[in-house]
Image (cartoon, rainbow, N blue to C red; front, side, top):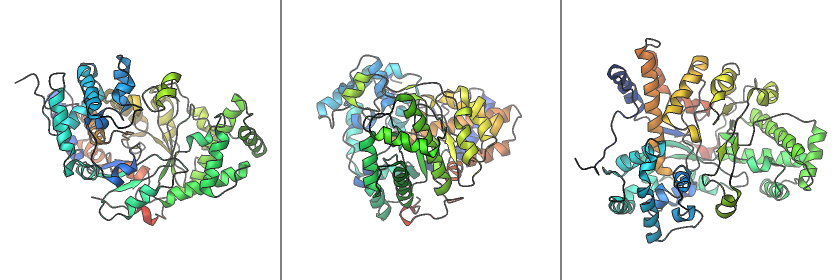
Amino acid sequence: MSNDAYTPHEDRLLPADPATREIARTLYERMRDQPIISPHGHVDPYLLLDDEPFRDPTSLFITPDHYVTRLLHARGVGLAELGVGRGPLEEQDARAAWRLLAEHWHAYAGTPSRLWMEHEFHQVFGLETVLSPRTADAMYDEIAEKLSRPEFRPRALFDQFRIQVLATTDDPTDDLAAHEALAADDTFTGTVIPTFRPDKYLEPARPDFRELTEALGEAAGQDVDNYDGYTAAMRARRAYFKEHGAVSSDHSHLDPGTARLEEAEASRLYTEAREGRIDADAAAALRRHLLADQARMAADDGLVMTLHPAVHRNHHQGTFEKFGADVGADIPVGVEYTKALAPVLNDVGLEPAFRVVLFTIDETVFSREIAPLAGFYPSVYAGAPWWFIDAPDAILRYRRAVSETIGYSRTSGFIDDTRAFCSIPARHDMARRVDAHHLAGLVAEHRMRLEDAADIADASPATHPREVFRLDGGTAAEATPATSAKKEN
């Protein structure tokens, strides 16, 4: 066999022990062909609305995927060489970026990015070749040729991937025209729903806070000169999102603090923030109060609240100024949940309509804080490993860290959290294989009946996320708007 030939092993990520691996194979078979439920991600809805062919392999695999670009950047490759911040690349530049990936491909050995891309090369594009400087051009040409075919357009791949629900992440002022058009399009068989992401509108320290609140007020048709008007505008936009199919709101701040202020103090600080004269400590206090307000709104409207905190965004200022956000320069920091969430959980934690899913990149809190919180509060769920810990070993550590406290029903189901459309099935397949690995070990050690492991395998990929994110209705979500009617494959 040529060194250039490669097919991903069918038993990848399953246990090495033969007896345990056989159990894992049985469990994985129950999961592998289940539909994909993706309740949190960053795919542009216009990708599916317009259904235009993907431009080239580089714009599909490299430029939008900061998992890929950040390691190349760490090895000395300029982000501009990869198409970041440049708009559509000319063919010669796209091919040059692909050759750079091939030149550094060895550096991805053992990483989830390589696992995902090799899955995509083989399962999606039918390639059986190892990427290298020798094979780069031929692989580029074969992928490019296939991208010109109808069966490789976004909607066709959406169906091929068996995606039933895909949630996007959207600005509160977005008119959601793409979602509305997709919902009304009888030729599209999937469900694409928005997610309410108000982060920057909850950050009073931002120099553009006044402009942001004005934009929010304009979208809501609401005067936002004062705190009450701002709060009314937030409620109106959340309602608008829910009318267009949203089931959740997403929040990512430096910390998940939710300490409430007296209403008069919140109103005073809001005015100071609008006038650009709030200091850093007061801005942090107001931000935590505004996040607690979002929890109260969630307890009223039933949107599931997801928290993705503790990331130092845009760590390198020069990179941010030149290329913008989301290019791989975000770095995790430690996080604390128990004290941070005490105010909001004492406020609305036992309200039937309130639900919150806690994510982290700080693994130390899985067993110490997140699982114990989810093991007491009916409203709290443990979110899947995310971002830097969206990886096989980290997923195994997560399962082992939380399952002894909360089992499996108090977890969110897998979250792919991706902008790279073709990586969605690869990421979900990875999670299913790792779950089969984990469950098989418990069965082999006689800590779990095979029948119970099979039930968990049946529920984890699709049933759990549907239940957690109220995709089939449920408390405070009974009034499903017409535009979000499910259209399943």
